[in-house]
Length: 321
Figure (cartoon, one colour):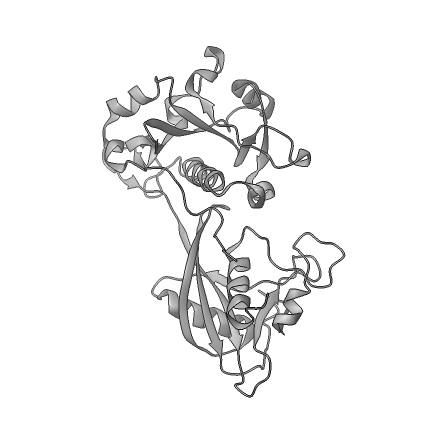
């Protein structure tokens, strides 16, 4: 059973050296082979309703925009090359939704998280890339040091303060967060177990792995140890990195680990978590999906690295599944 991490594995050549060549970028925006990835207020454009089967993302040729609906140069971000074709994200958030759809000529805007699990991996990665970098542009219109307006540069991969005295350069922000599957094996022949937690804001029965943002002055491994201790009162050892996932909801990088707990005694903090339980492989195999309202226990979304951590653990401790 092969497992992959959703929103990772992008196929584009990011062509970072070309970002510095403003004339080259401008020329690519005039070419008929250039591909545009439309985004409206963090939503991606799809060709068919989400209720009508697996949606297909709308990737527009540059010429598809009518002259009356032309976006401004500031609204384009160069994502890279798909073969010889340049690919740009285009932000239509300044318009009303109907106007944004009219500019594209077809499709409807839908939250990527709603349809992410059903997309082809290459499409999921491309849309996540476009969503993430355009969200950064919309939230960094002003310099955090002097308050002046910022402008897009280097194909949209930096923003530069417009004040000559400041001239600060801002780079796309990604907030690192750890996410960890905590396991315990008594070594006495009993079933291994993993720990999952329930946040009070989630539907009853929804359990996932523990996670938290990395704080200044700590390593990723130290963040794992701290988060587990704070959320469930456990000491962990054997902290091992497994994989990472871009998570542009809105701007995180989820760094996945596995760690071994020294005991089974759990004390939830009552703030981050309201419940935490140990589960055996047999219990997890009987669990339902995240959106299954009838299930007593629901596993994390299939597009999350939390689900990847659980399924890789199950494959290791119980390869019969």
